Image 1 (cartoon, rainbow, N blue to C red):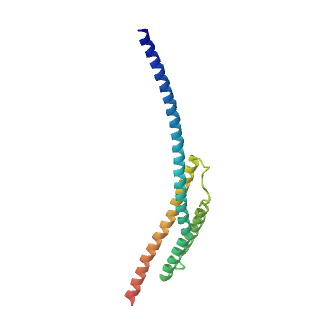
Image 2: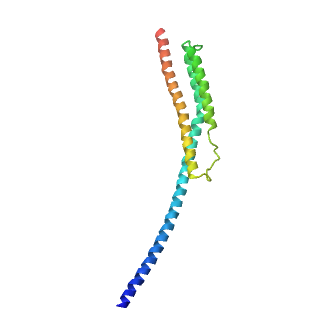
Image 3: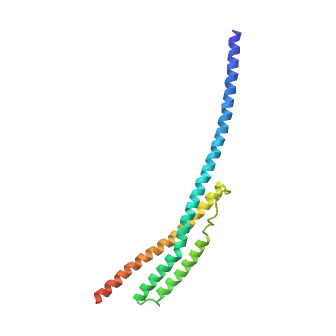
Length: 168
């Protein structure tokens, strides 16, 4: 009878030791997995940041030419309608100058393409990504504005052509 009680005590001690080892191993594996996940998240953020930077550079570098093209287009329309020296033309000139200033600011915010961001923390990567997205939004607003103006110019050209054809 005494041997039976001793056996239960040893079994309980062995089970406790196994449970403690399992708990410690689980905690170590959990920590290692957490660190690996953090590395993968940082990698994902760096990749997303590089993609956003590339998109931003493409948009920002196209803006000056697009605005200049839209400016020439609108000036041609104004000239064709006899409004080249009007108050509307002066107002548009002021707007173009403001938009060119905005584009210069946007281009100044284009990040250095040599950055690899390996030393940046998770938080810094998030902040940089948010900043790039804000700049992309800002650049896209200008891009869309001038795309809309170019479409309006095309419609105006069609109207001018139709009037010219009707006169003839």
